[in-house]
Image 1 (cartoon, helix red, strand yellow):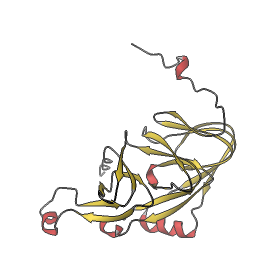
Image 2 (cartoon, rainbow, N blue to C red):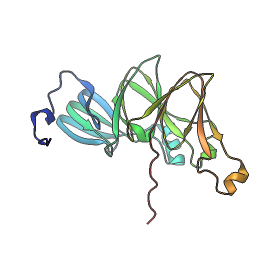
Image 3 (cartoon, rainbow, N blue to C red):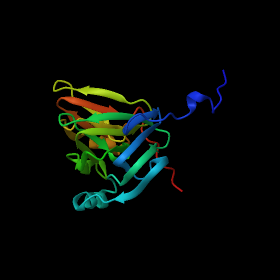
Length: 223
């Protein structure tokens, strides 16, 4: 059955309260009344009286990003109005963070979040093994966060009895209380001979959850 793009059910409806809400599977809406934050380059539409300004990362975080090429390039959204955020048609999900439940997220998977949340760039123990390292953003405080995943993600429980190993290119987020390290699953001899292509994974131990993309990003073709 054919559906018309302009059917009433496809039209964006008015918001009932300020804050971050799910618009559809691949976009979120932030009804701003004061201030919000978002990853640069993710705003796709807006209306109202809003201003967008590039945000500095602080000296420590700026230096980490300069060294690793990673991090979280943010913009501050201020005023009163509505803004929609999305990223390459990826699936979007909302997470409520509180004082007892923080979240560590890969910078590339952050979409937008409440200004009441604090963030810090953290490094995975032993990240030098991964060639470039794993630098991620840990969110604390109280507020709502929107993140992306390349499809419907896997949410895997981690327990002291059952640690989880995740491909470093597929990990989206995990509980900050988990202990992380990089694990080599092949011998040096096997890697020299070609190996399986899955030489190093992120190992998570303790009590919490880890969120994983259902597919790894495709490499960018060389020109």
